[in-house]
Length: 137
Figure (cartoon, rainbow, N blue to C red):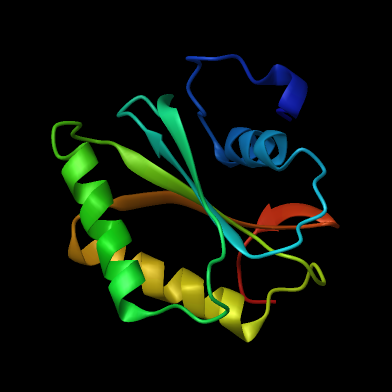
């Protein structure tokens, strides 16, 4: 299993365990005070590109304009990177169990990414309880 101590810059995040370790490394045992959406862009070899973007003060529920603008931005940034993908992490206060709003963000961003031909490599939920894949419980 890959751990955050195994994260080496410019190394591919070859599998789900490596992606989770990377998200855990980014979260760094934080105790979130507000909802933040992080995204990391991966090249075709699944190496993180040198930009990690946190978007603070994300509303509880996704809104069409924000979601559409994010997917459009990913499309513009990655259009010259065939085979690239995006890793998302929704960080928020509260319990580790995925909420209806968390799952709404996941569904909205997955749909918008698909509309723009963007591959989502992973989607994580980060709370004070740690990081886990964002899936329905």
